[in-house]
Length: 603
Image 1 (cartoon, rainbow, N blue to C red):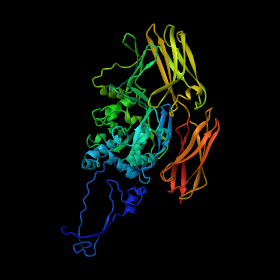
Image 2: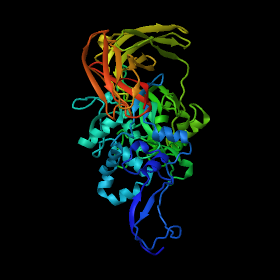
Image 3: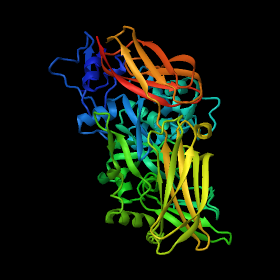
Image 4: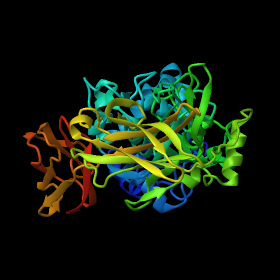
């Protein structure tokens, strides 16, 4: 059609389009549609438009788009794009705990904040036209988000901190992304975040922008600083650990995003790992990914982006070395299977844990797993691991190790040699953070023992709250290390185990029936398990569709030892249906205590 006619008005059919595109939770103020799905727009020509004849005039409406983030399963789309509640896994691989989180991507104003994050990135500032044009590519957007969720190189969302938290919010206090994003939009970088907070916010922003996203936890996560795929733990001749760059985090949390990879080929489509926690730089910026999970599994380390670093996080071998006074190193222990265990994410359409280790790597010890590792080593000709039978160490834990209690642990030394062995026996307890950073000592014992062939000796260590209480962080982790030293034969052995102290339970009750726009009370109770009082106690609740997108906090002051902390908090649900109410308890000595409950809201 060559003519031009006037349009009186354009009806974007927001309500019907939003419903069919599952964007109705954003509200009805503007049209928000998803790529790759048709939508209807109604044009109303002016009454005097002579060039327009109903049923005869043809119009062409040209839009260029991709369908690069489309998942074919509707159930998975609901989980990874629409679900506002999730679980983030923490702890150790033997004691995995799911922590509730409110992603809240549909809460009022959040989408605008997510768009603001893109507009604040250095890429947009340096070349706005190029940046906006590149936003059609989810690989590009995900990489920008990986850099912008942390504030290391820019005016990003979160400041990372793993030690001193003065002047900001302790990372364990956050229970949702909305509060963090609003604080950033109003005043710049928010203090403070750690890996699970970085990942949760990245998931919120990705889902808000329509990119399917899941939060992933890797237990026994390697931080390989020298890129040799080996984590080297160094000790002096007395069994004291020497600080080096490499480390193993008890757990580390990142995100996977679903997209095609036209830059790499269709075989690498699907889940892509990116990590907004600032660990190492990539192309000069603190960001990581997206790297195809398939490339990580197959050891295809040349595939963009940052695949070698992520491969090491789940596959690095571990070697323990003693640095002798003559300058030489003696290997006394090692492992090929202590890194990358029980890789976890929330299951689709349930609150169960879904183990996705098989998506990242072949079974430990399998022919395929070793082949992939050797392939990734390239020119590193490392010898196959393996130790002959000799001394064996095994650490045993107590039951019911709740924070505040005293308990006893012990280590068993078994002599599998043909002759008696005499050695120094050391047993350390050290407070650590989840990222492997060692804190203060909270227990030590030693002995010199002779162990006849085939026999065992035990060394006991009592862990008392008076010692470990002031030393532990809010992660509530204690690392136990047992070392035997035989200087005559230059024979060293080591065993390690990390204790996750149990949290006290928060009892949550909703009193009465929950109705839209009607006040309802949440009754919260927690028993102080410590033998000392708690100060500055507070409960906070938050939930999409329940608390208007913001946490509600009730301060209750002090709580005596073995006494109950109680609070009743009123909230007004804003949306009908099954919603999730998240609860956080905070105090001076107990932090990061969380729980959640499902609330069914009626009209």
